[in-house]
Image (tube, rainbow, N blue to C red; front, side):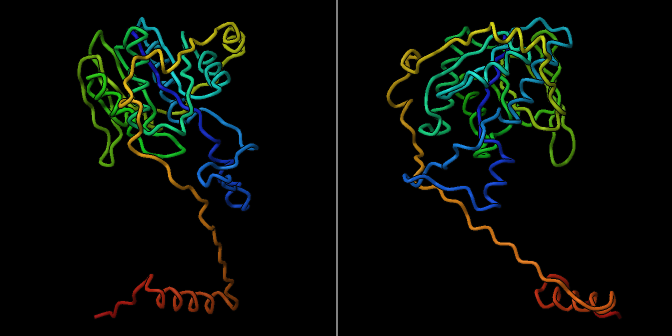
Length: 271
């Protein structure tokens, strides 16, 4: 079985939030790009769980080859981490993700998967932590002509048959189907593993396959974004805290009066 895992480098969400709360996150002169020189990039958390899902399939005894694929200008650290976790092969597509919309990103990833011999199973994180859109996996499925199963918390493989447990607002849902297919992985899968020292040493010897977009045979139309970022800004964060003084009974009465005045709570008359 050939498993392709699409991964993305994102800004560390915790660091971004801290910068925003401290008022230190600024937008560059172009009005579109955050000034993030001091914020580290890490693997998107949901994509790391997609890698974990692939590794669990292998752990279950399925004979498979796992390929991690990513788009970006500098993917050495990201793809080395994938190799340290257990990916057999890594593929780097050199491009600026900021200049691509979701459809173009999906076109590039789908073409790369096809160029590398296709895949029986494509795994993606349910969404990326930087834009939270979650549409690229579905567009990859459409481009490759594969059905897409979203929000998986578990995957079982039996030959060419998939059994996927989906995490839904109404509880778990189990669906089945044949490969090839695209499956997106949710955080309900559980915590991903850490790379071992042996894995880190082995990853240093693995070199990614470098691919240029020009090598993918995509048309100008397939590479033209339909959605273009025009502006990005940091919203103003305000925090207001009011202390209520008095005895516990007095403070409770004042609090209820304030909540009632703001229509947060409503006093109902007893019949």
